[in-house]
Length: 76
Image 1 (cartoon, rainbow, N blue to C red):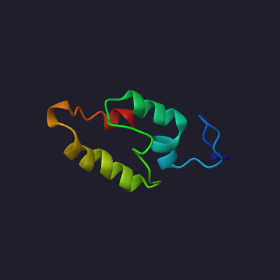
Image 2 (cartoon, rainbow, N blue to C red):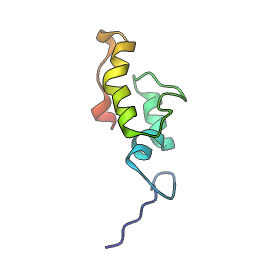
Image 3 (cartoon, rainbow, N blue to C red):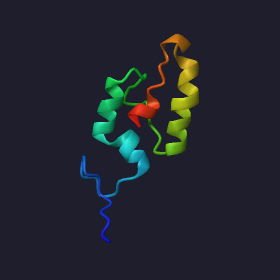
Image 4 (cartoon, helix red, strand yellow):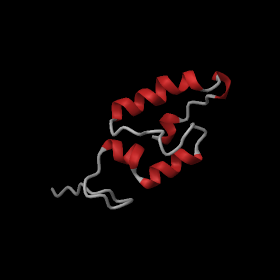
């Protein structure tokens, strides 16, 4: 069975979970269009654990609870 590791969306030679969810240009566009606070520095660290920690714990302390719709599972 042949397995290609490149990202089919942007062509990066080695696609990782972090790249697919947080770093790929298409993923960044999705995050920018979501209700999630985002900027070019939203996911500055290439670690899935740090980024998930930000989404599920840290962001909830930044924005108003009534404005938090928890779209993360749907986006991911």
